[in-house]
Length: 91
Image (cartoon, rainbow, N blue to C red):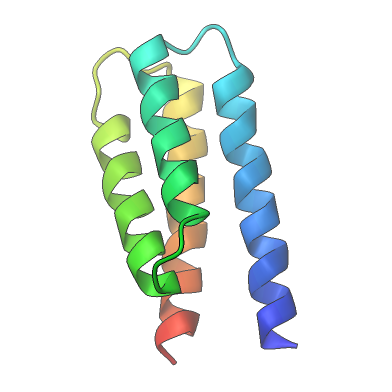
């Protein structure tokens, strides 16, 4: 059951990251970093390592001065979801 919940959350996060990547109002450098975060989440490392790498990238992106306000809010929401997943991965 817990594995299924994690996979559903990962699918949701992946879709949210795709939405940002598909938004042409978001600067290319930000879209590239969002794609890199998504690639990290789909990597081969341990789940906690992948989540922490993605959180680190997304945190860096959210501090970019060129990011649209709405996109920054989306990224904060994704980071919050990842932090919850990370806590359950540690448990």
